[in-house]
Image (cartoon, rainbow, N blue to C red; front, top):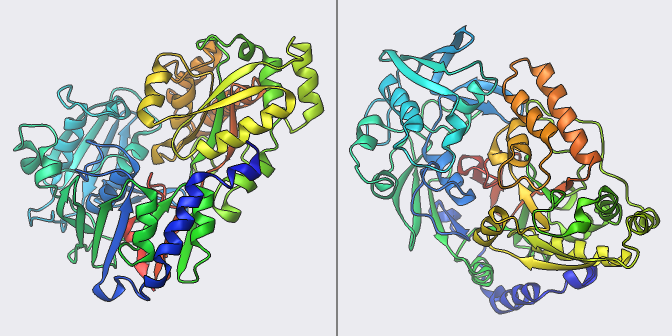
Length: 519
């Protein structure tokens, strides 16, 4: 299937049908008059606590309901005060922080050092079973100095200490959270934070209702107070249902992954599209280590041929949604991420060179390969498969769910993979280094030098040296064609025209509730 055929897939026809059916009924102002934003979610949510269910939909709720000690300024790339007003490294392992004394949780309880100390120590408690506990493995303990001061002690000098306290460490109310004996009951029954929105109700069937926290006095340019009075996040796994609900006024905002859907929807003048690019990119991996049994991919000449067969600029313009925000990408990180470096670009598009390389490797007649694709990358994988056939490579596409992707990944069954990487919203290149090159189940190249560099990057505090380390790592990955950074992956929102969305959020959802407002 070529690029034009991708644009005529069955899902696009379903979207057209939904628009044709629903077009006459779209109201002029949706729920602006009731100050209620209704958001359609692909995946249901049963908790706003990111520790309990780390996925984009949870990220939207978590950033609204909870705060961290520090805030990462997404515009300036700097760490700012938030629940903590100041901090000082008293030695290479010890951080002392002073906290605000005017913050209350949504239930009225005062925020103190007890809550911060409890949350940090809970994160490293072996009994606390949550998916990304390794993010805090550097932490030895947190100690209370007094009601508004605490001490954070690392096991070793760590370049990520402040960033981890700013991103991905929402503070929990100590007494309330500890009162629940069953894991997850806090998030399901009484999720209370200090954020700009309060959780009124939440369950996987009816979704989540959040209301504006009008006592949010500690907002700043880094994390401002909200403006929309109420938000209802509604689970709707079927895209055709989402489209019909948008066009008939049942919801106000969709998070859309496929270009065809966006193009069909924006034909209506009463619908607006916001594309926002943060630190997510599409990528293509190749099994250089031979875990999947496809011998051809172990040859650098073959991997290079596959890279050079792809006109990433043309494919991106044809398939990836987001307008000007969607563009071919050469790097494994973004400039706003600390430690980001690299100068070696992927091999350039050249069909003749690709065919010659295949012949030199003994595959002048091509070979068979399966390209697995994660949700949100299915159409891109189909387009890539079509382009590879131009050099004789018989590529097929397996459109996987996230569950199937993870199972096949661990089992070593992925020959090639098209996916997307968000860095977990973490503004440091170490997240990408760990994702690809830490020697875990995602590692399909088993390059000892890259694994060593990944460890060196985490053990180095000096920022200039860290950039050098990651530059060496990412440059080698491009030169060996282990992973191909393919294109940026903007988050695209289709919504009613009376809604405005701030761009550039590092939230894994692509936007924050407190960054949305009525016009």
